[in-house]
Amino acid sequence: MSPRVTEGKKKGLQAVSDARGVIAALAIDQRGAMQKLFGQAMGCEPGAVPAEKIVQFKEAISRMLTPHASAILLDPEYGLPAAKQKNKKAGLLLAYEQTGYDKKVPGRLPRLLDRWTVNRLVSAGADAVKMLLYYSSTSGAEINDGKHAFVARVGAECADADVPFFLELVSYGEGMDEKGADFAKSKPDVVAQGMAEFSKPQYRVDVLKVGAPVNLAFVQGSPSAGKAILYSRADALRHYREAAAKAAVPFIYLSEGVSNETFQFALELAAEAGVRFSGVLCGRATWQDGVPVFVKDGMSGLEDWLSREGTANIENVNRLLKAAQPWHSAISEPRAEKYVRGKGKGRL
Image (cartoon, rainbow, N blue to C red; front, top):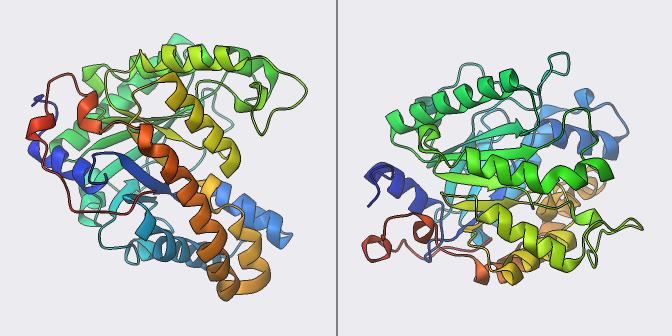
């Protein structure tokens, strides 16, 4: 076993994985993004959304969808009541970062939650700790050097607590619209370079959480494709392979706010490319359409929607995880024969 994966980290990774060792997790640690969704549905400013609405929504997601997931990712600000309602077989990841970034400060610098430490997250029930980092290999050296040091400190804190460290990389380009064609052209390299950088041992990252290496809105055949096509299917497959080749630690895909249909397309590309991904942490592609239902029809309406549409969304993703590889197979030293299979769990 690699010395980097201690018994404590191994235990945490098993807790958030299914019996195969695939991470089939549900993400609902969104805070600012969720306020915006509720604000749109309620016709009010995001800051005017009652906190209790968000808490109740997360509780319902946890209660009804974790039977289909290996784990759930929540935040300590709104999500701790939901953590108590998760399926007992589902693991728990807790977010460590503050939502968003200070737009007055260049570089989208990371900030940790006030009054929280890794040990406090573990005491709150976390099997693993997640931190989100906005990262662009095209940023200035001073900005990225600060981010490198920041991640290394969090990695050391997780290592000291002997808990798995999940690093979520949100790719962007300085001065670019992340949804525009200009950034779409550079995204493959930004994603690949981020995976290469944070696979280095000094960061002590156990699992990378990354977006697709291409903007799916510009890929031929994508459900979300518009008139402007920048990548053929063959181009997209090549970028998937090139990014995956940069990873020296297990990695999983996030849904980046796309629709469920588009996220399925992203996973189909990963499977066709033959990349060694270890699962997903899927968020809005599963539950975002439930927000207006909850606002309009209350908890009973949301529960009805989750029993039908929400469950269908999560099972759509589950079916595409057959191509995923166990996290332990993505670690350099052989460990399959040392892996103790966890108890049977649901899949995301």
